[in-house]
Image 1 (cartoon, rainbow, N blue to C red):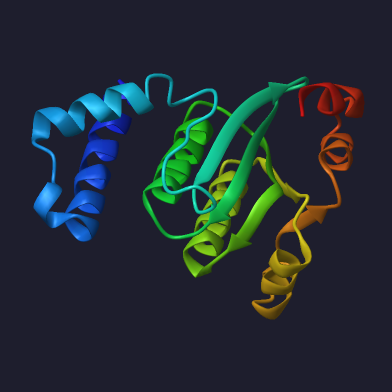
Image 2: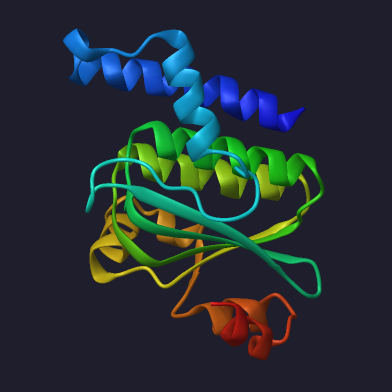
Length: 179
């Protein structure tokens, strides 16, 4: 069921991107659907990539014991299709029972206001569900954003994934072998 929702959202977003950037070359609905099926066959778990090199957001989900899920993001955590899909993915994970979530920003270049909104949404969802949310690996630019917006007082940040896993009661060795 979730795959259908993700495909529908991806199709809508892909069509919106094509309309905004290449109106004369916009694909037909069947061509766009084919692209979605090729790019998003296993959207829930694994890597997903789209966009122009250097500007894409890549998201990977992996699970560690005991019950710790890591959402690792690389690229720009900024407004766009991939950010919307990352938010939908986090919503689905919490709805499916994830209660310990680490957002790994080790390979994220930047976060904008939309990205910060998604991060705060993840935090709020887990807080309401009685879960725990941690951020790890943020670069100086992202740390500065968290400081300026005073969200660093709400969002727990660790230097690396191993530290976040240890703080959630897991085995840091599992994080080292998964990352």
